[in-house]
Image: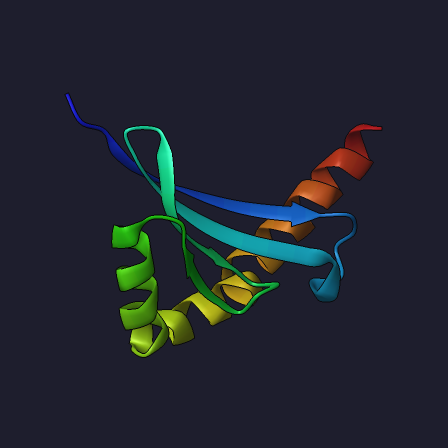
Length: 89
């Protein structure tokens, strides 16, 4: 069968907002075809289909919504994770 999935990730070295990178990667049959990275600030396509979607999404409301995810999703959760790690050490 075919498998489509999305992986959302927050990579960080500290709980400071500028030390966090938010990524959202789209896969089809284990092949990543498009990714949003907060470091780049836009979608990047890796296949023909991904390139077409990246162009469309970068010119629409999708890219604006993704740019806000670093602060909304990562900043809060990284703070929770760092606090939990510090209280258990």
